[in-house]
Amino acid sequence: MAPRWRSILVDTGRFFVDALKRGADAYGIDISKNMLERLKSKIPAQDHRRLWVHDAVTMHLPLKFSLIIAPFRVFSHLKEVEDQVKCLNSVWDHLEPGGRFIFDVCVPDFRLLEGMHNHPDFEGEYEPGKKL
Image (cartoon, rainbow, N blue to C red; front, side, top):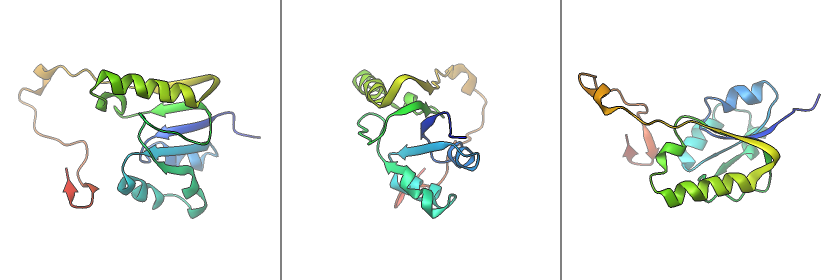
């Protein structure tokens, strides 16, 4: 049976790897070539064609999708309203009629930070020589 959704994940692999293993017609983008290289190490070589270095604001991809997912606060990293609108327009341009866009946002309550220990979400290089 053919997959119901052709989806794109703005993700470095937490969903992507599992989606491919389950037979999804999934594609992925990330702004960081290094993050995509990490993802490529987790998937078969024949699926590397499913990955593109792009950002969600300016992406111009050769396909349309029935589902676009931007997990893990991707949209929250767009601080300028102009970039947020451009991202939404870019997503719209890549959705098939009736397609869906799923994303999450975080509006932190900074009062929660009192007394919390410093725990990074990500540790490592996001570009050669640039560490978080």
